[in-house]
Image (cartoon, rainbow, N blue to C red):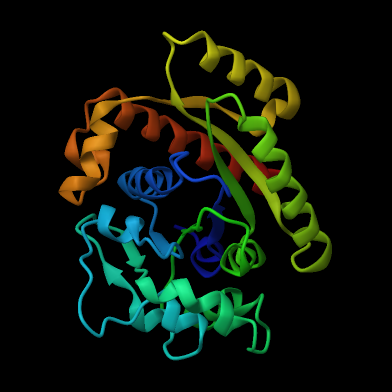
Length: 268
């Protein structure tokens, strides 16, 4: 790995203000797939539900410092990072304290840049090629912190009737953040999730999204797959739970697409 990649990780915010679209599933399985091909990955869990943490097998412990303590200035990011069972994949876990972070952040200096500042302070101590931020399912101050820290946003989009409606609101927020807080923010891509090829609605939604966003939509789609749904209850990404299932293979393909887009960006 070259030194410039080590010193400057690519920071991707995995975000969608709608819940139940496969956001956390995408964050942990994309992170696992990237680590499996040799990338070093940090997943930052900024969702108060903490599903990315538990999905990586990281259990909540009493007095555990988390991403919440980083945001309010009670801990450094390097001090809360936990190694997962997956080689080259670490996690900055979430705790339920994040529920109150919105109110506390409102009174702090640089309230929209708390995460960006924490990542900048961490990099001399720890290096990663990718940092994935699992955002909460809302456009709140936690998500704004994620978008302000990120180089790009990766949007999981469920193949359902109102998918495009919710996406337009998110894209407006991305544009606002780009103009006012983070001019480097781009859209890495939109990944279609919970795709059911037996359902004509899935095909129609996929076609509509591709018509609107073109090449921003990844070629890889994440299918509805029972193994993906089962894996979190075992504290494992689906790639560890059943690496041969169609869900696992889809996330491996998605990781390849993400890496290819990053390489094209560097070459441009």
